[in-house]
Each structure stands twice: as structure tokens, then as C-alpha cells.
Length: 336
Ligand SMILES: [Zn+2]
Picture 1 (spheres, rainbow, N blue to C red):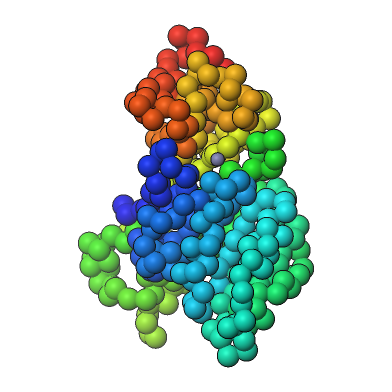
Picture 2 (spheres, rainbow, N blue to C red):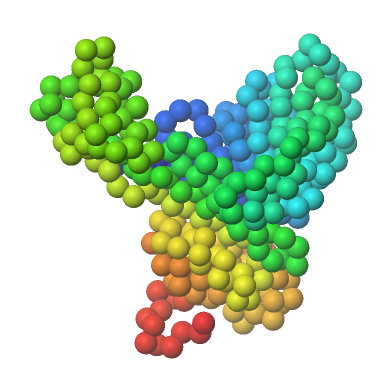
């Protein structure tokens, strides 16, 4: 089975947090957070269709400028999604620049900024290069609760958490992994071709077994036959991203629901548990708390990051503390 996407942290765990989600096929990528992006090449940034911003503290948003600069002459739109107040902040960023060189002849690079309330997009604003990025207010968009993006192959959900301010956690979920079994195709005497993409799409849509897939003009087969003999179908990949949250029940419950059974959970672990009072004051997690949340969510793999600079020389301690809480045996009475 090949994964649809490959997630990787943008920076080392002491630098700005952020996740680059690269698609294995096709020129496409997603970003979770827009902190320091200098380690990403222009080629990588040009692939970004959507950037999801947890909140606009500088370490999560200061990379907006670099993304804008690289994408300015791009023909495909850039979608930015963030919490309440986000569209206004994007507008302020854009208004900070002198844009007299943009006019009706410019490449019409479009930025769409949407504010996620938990139940949909309360506010959607569009900024077009040809209009020197003057704000246009678009109709609000009501999606099902928690949904941020829904495409054929994957969906992205979010939850609004509390960091003293609203802060959004994200989860990328591949709908179904559908791979072609070439030996099965050969036995059925079928050629490869674009029809396979249609067949995969039909599976992901949940089309019934008797729906017919057209292979070429004079040949079609029921989806059930292909499903049985030529396609491998498995649960899709699930990747969760959680940063900058206070450790209290409401946040914990929301994170557990969002990250439930994820293949990978990327979660902040800024402080050691001996400094839990500082973590609480700053509305951040400790490594132990991050590990305990990962364990309760039943995730397969835990990746901690967003470490506080005060532990520069103790990176292993942070990682170990999170791992121990993640792997702790329930009978050993680990803390809630
Ligand atoms: Zn932060």
C-alpha cells in the first residue's frame, strides 16, 4: 500500500512549529501553520493549495510573507483557513505592502481567507492581485460541524480549542486507500488506463457493487468484480496536528475525539512536567500531558515538537517524558 501523502515537520522541534503535507502523486501540498518557512523551497511552497493556521501568534503566522512572495505570480488560488479574526489579519498583512505594480494586467493570483468557527466558515474574504488585494466579502459557508475541506480522496476536520484565545487543531484523513492489484487486472484481462482512476473514485464515494465502470467504449464491468479481484481497499491514513492548547478537560476531550486512532499525532510538548505550573500559565502542554493525550486517543505513532528553548540541552528528556506517558501501562496508575 502506498500512502496518499507524506507529512513532515517543517523545522526542528525548537524552531517554529508547522507540518508540510506533500502528496505523493501530483503537484500538491498542504500546510498546517505558517511559522518560519525558510526551510521549504519555492518549489515546495508553490505546491501549497491550502494552509491551515492554528492561530496568529507570530511563531505560527510569520511565514505568511514568504508564502505570499513565492506564490504572487501563481495562477492557482491559495486558500488560507484560520480561527475567528483571521481574515482581517490576512488583510492587514496584505495592506502592509506597496502594491502599485499590481493592476488589471497582472497574473490574477487569488487568496481566499476563511474563518473557522467550529461549525463552518463564518467569514470568507477574497483578495485578488488584479484588484491590488482589496478585500471582497464572500458569502459565509456552512459545512457539517468540524469540516474544513472535503475532497474525493481526503477530508480535513478541525476543532476550536482554548489557548486563552481560539486555536484550531487539524486532522487530515484519507477516505479509503484504494490500490490496484496488477496481477488481478492481468487475470481479468484488463488494461491499465484512466478508467482505474474512475474505479478508485467510485470506491471512495461508496458506490454500490452493481454500478458499472466503463473500461473502454465496448467494455464495462460491475464495480463489485473489480473490488473483489483487482483492488486492494483499506482504511485511509489519518494525521492529526495539535499545538498551543491549555491542559483542561474540554480541550483534552476535543483532541481525543479529533485524533482518535490516528496513524500519526503531531502534538506540542513545550515543557517538562516539573514545570507544569509554567505550562498552565502559558496555556501549553507538558510532554507528559501530550503523551497521555496520545495514549487516550489510541494513536499509532506520537511525534512531539514545539519545545521551549529553555530545554535546548534537554531535548531527549522532553521526548522521553512524552514517550513514557504514551507507553505507560494502564495498571501502573498513570495520571489522567
Ligand atoms: Zn506556539
